[in-house]
Every structure is written in structure tokens, then in C-alpha cells.
Length: 215
Image 1: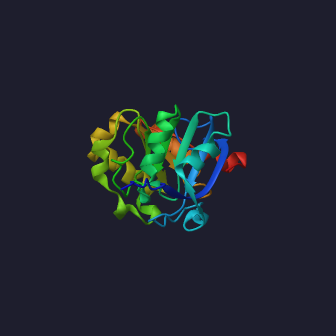
Image 2: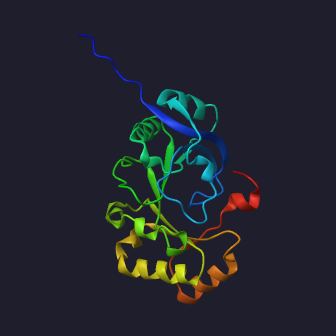
Image 3: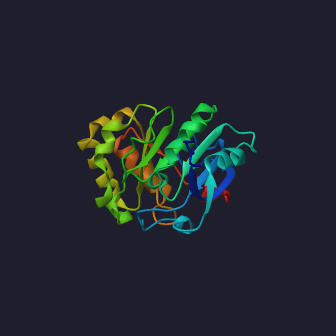
């Protein structure tokens, strides 16, 4: 009997080329694959259009589309990319093809499927997001030195909560830690002042796409 190999498909919201804007890679040209679907509803979300809109594409088709750009930095984002089991196949194929792969995840799902040479950019949701009870904190112990953790901070309460979380989970210190102010809610200079006053070893980052007018 002949075996039939199933074609792996992913529901994709969009594929585009822009500037990487929210990590230690910020400022570099990057190809983005935004996958459809998210299990969280953060108060500050700016990609609600990715909750349900998208097309079914094969892994090979996705690789063909990203190959149209002369760029070897690839970010797989969402939505929440780990909701789709086939995301692992896309990560693996992109790694094998020589891309530097970043996977942006909301931190509520097991990061084990990412593995390999990909860099995890994982949110730890602060209370102001409305979703802090969804943090899967067991992920913290799976992160590696090259991975990154992002706290999106909306106010002083969020900041103090993030600072307390860093103290309680000292193993986070092996990763790059990013503090990002919620755009139009917390001024970057205020967050910078708090970081300096407390001498935190974290990286202040801005949502560059908001200031540049790009995706």
C-alpha cells in the first residue's frame, strides 16, 4: 500500500517585510510571518485583526513567499504562533534553510515546540494586560541565554509587579530582559526614570513601528 504524505498547512494572516521593532534585534530589516489566532485578549493589543483573518498556506508556500525578500532574519509571530502544531515544522525548515529565526509568543503555552536554533521572544503578561493569570511560568526554566523575555508595562503597578517577578524568578537573569511601555499610556521617559532609580539590569525598548509608521 502506498503511503500518502500529508501536506502541512498553517493559517497565515500576513507575510511582510519591515523593520524588526520589539526585541534586541530592533532596527534590523526582517521578514514577518504573522499566524492567525490568539488565545489571549490583552488590553493593549494592536493586532486584533489576526484573531481570525487568514489563509491556509502550505509550509512550502510560506517558505517560497519569505524567499522573495533578500533578508535572512525571520520572525514568526501572531496572534499566538504556538496555537498551531504545524508552526514547529515552519521553524525547523526555516532554521535548516539558514534563517535566523525569532519566535514571538505570549508566554501562555509550552515553548518546547520552538526548540532548535530559534530565539524565543516571550511575553510575561503584567496585570494591566488583563491576562497575567495566563502566564505559564514553567516556561521560564526552559529559556536559554539567547532567548528574550518582554514585560509590557502600562503603569507603576505593572512596573512593580515586573520587578517583583524578576526577583522571584532569578533564573530570568540568564536571558535578555526587555521592558516596554504601553504606547500612549505610559511615557517612555517615566519608565526609563524608574529603571534608572532602581538600577535594573533590563533593556528599555520602544515599539518602534508606532514611531516609524510601519507594521
